[in-house]
Length: 357
Image (cartoon, rainbow, N blue to C red; front, side, top):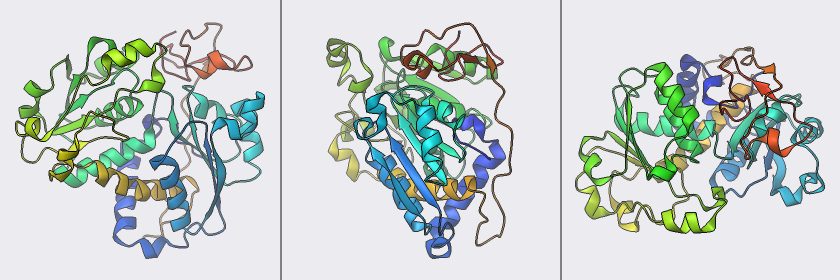
């Protein structure tokens, strides 16, 4: 049984195979209309969501399956103190696959340790969002024709931006890519991601200026300043509105530079950019359904009706081990649940949130 908790759970060849499957599904959706008939997807969303939850449900329905779930922790037994592990055990009796979004980093990994069905991380706090990463890769490949030898600019909230963390990790697997991280000092990429990129030899640089970087970018990935990730409201209000991409500013960018955004946007992309052919963020929304269809089919171990092949073979999860060292990240599931034992990776990082122990 396979789970998708982090982009690294997929080998590069598997990532490309899922993107190819998503392309086939977009080209001929009718061929997949009964591919998951009789199967049930549970959407366990402890945080608000529009695109991710609805596209997961749409994906399962388009495969001929059914859905159940909740859209808010207050609507589940989490409001009574139930752990994610117990919830996963319970829901495994009702569904064939689980998609979980949770505000605490590492919660989907914790759930996968107890679930008897595949678990998909639909976003865990500021940590990771692997399904959005696959959507972003699909969109970039559609627009640029390839995923290598690109200069990608990431702008906005890079500290808490889980989509940035996941996409940077995924794109670092491709040859010749360079990253430009554009943010105020307070929202720079987290230390664990910087160390990960340095260890892999991935070229990147950090800057605060957007306009001066636009001419040399192949792809621009905008993000919002996320109010819900701040403990201090004054800090959020001070940083809100740091960047605004508008039609005038976009004149400095290459004519074929797609603008991506995981959405929702607040004020970081003005409405006049929507009319520019480089605006690709609603393409991402469109692609989300097909990527999630491909993931559901693959993680359920069901064959592609067109090729007859199963995309993902069984593979052992990354090794983790118990530790007496406590994770000091207050957003980590190991800090939120007293019964959650501390686990570390082979690099002495917290297995749940990736922070150095």
